[in-house]
Image 1: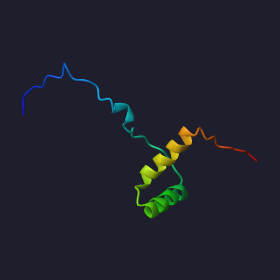
Image 2: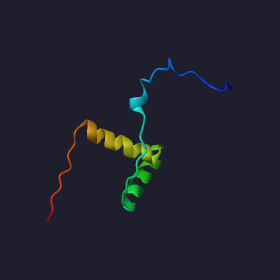
Image 3: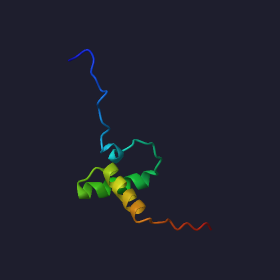
Image 4: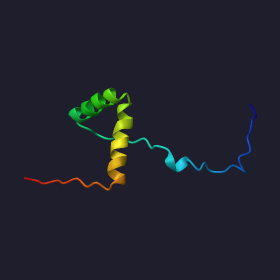
Length: 69
């Protein structure tokens, strides 16, 4: 390995915007179990399944209908 590398001519990755960002989210245990069970049926990691579901909601601009009693 070189002691130093020259990155002065480096270009930003065009795929950088498509990368995932790690966050912390608090979910209820039954919600997690639901997605884990569904993910096991579909042979997909559960976090990937949650991401796909949320992306679908965002792309279709689905709104949650909350009604407080």
